[in-house]
Amino acid sequence: MMRLLINGAAGRMGINVINSAKKSGYFDYIVGIDKYAKNKKFEIPVYCSTSDIDTKEKFDCIIDFSTKEALYDILPYALKTKTPIVIATTGFDEKDEKYIKEASKSIPIFKSGNMSIGVNTLISVVEQVSKAIGSISDIEIIEQHHNQKIDSPSGTALMLAKAVEDNTEISNVTNGREGIVGKRPQKELGIHSVRGGSIIGKHEVLFILDKEVLTFKHEAEDRAIFANGSIEAALFLSKEKPGLYNMRDIIK
Image 1 (tube, one colour):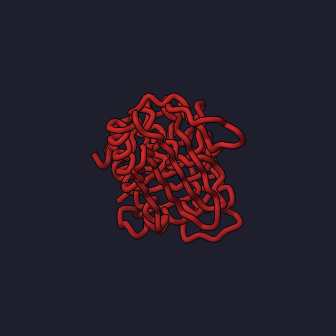
Image 2 (tube, rainbow, N blue to C red):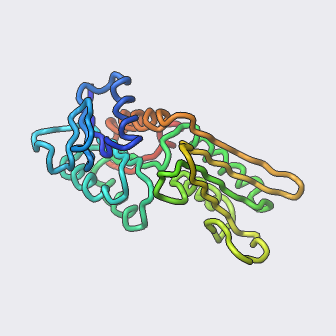
């Protein structure tokens, strides 16, 4: 049995992770962190910050579904306590990414913009198709999410974009288009973000050729798939040495 710490416990994904962790049967002790903890009721202990956790408390893994700003509270705690951490938060900039990479030299870190096995399979497919016909296609990515999502494009859209870029000669990624932009450049990748209602997550990659279009799509029907993926990542990470891991290391 394992001891789990969940950062962002009051959020939509945090609540899902709590439920999935309980159902999994792998954890005998679950604790949460969230700055809004005082305003909500939980079935587990939830603290407002890492500074509220007793120094004697030890955890086998941390799962982080919070915000990019919270990284500088939870990652120092993980480093200080030598605790493996699953980072499922998105929206990081170059500085954040460098910090995470440097920290992975000291502790095991699992980082993914999407914890779904289906999405990561989609990424593999996009890589293969990009190699095969990317040079003769106009490629566009469309991502859709609920109206409360604060970052755009989504972390998953950026992962898909990287899959295309790494396997083509595309040199320009544009987020949407507006005004008289002229003809579409051949080596351009367009990303389009839709926000509305309660859409959990939908991603499409279009390979547009002359007189035909190939569309690859993934749609999340329940947030539990991301929570379950983070639990799998935590179990995987508990056995690993310091390093930076992702979903490919689980599904390969």
